[in-house]
Image (tube, rainbow, N blue to C red; front, top):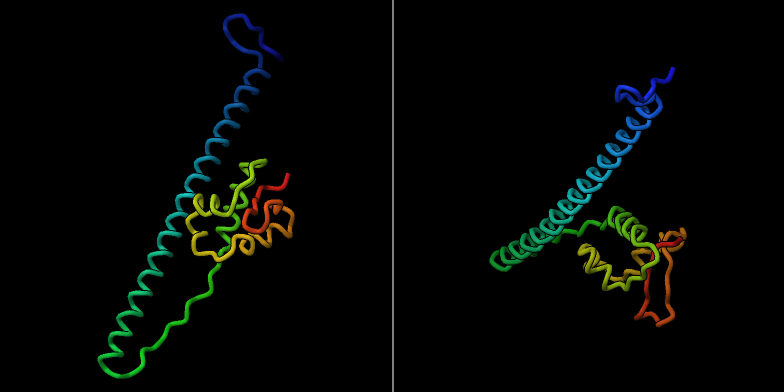
Length: 151
């Protein structure tokens, strides 16, 4: 049974629609906040990882100094293999958000400081390129390679 618009009350379907719109808006805001929090946490992990690498270098320097004093060889620490899958996902998600715009490697490295330590952005993005989520433009040659999200 619908209520009439007399007396300032809305029909039942208008109230339900308004409630659904409010709920959708709340869900969108929550999703945005979660994405911002995740980006902040990922950035914090990147900062921690870079600090760990700095400390490892300092540790090796101290061990080398101790070995010079003692005359015994310093134990060398093997560097753990890098896992860039999380950064790769972020780059692909960012490119998807900027679909239609082409970016050079240097621009991606500026946007994502974690890519500074990557030797080749082309190799870094090899898997998404093979999957078809990232497109490559090499018309300017290897030194002028550009990347964008696949449509």
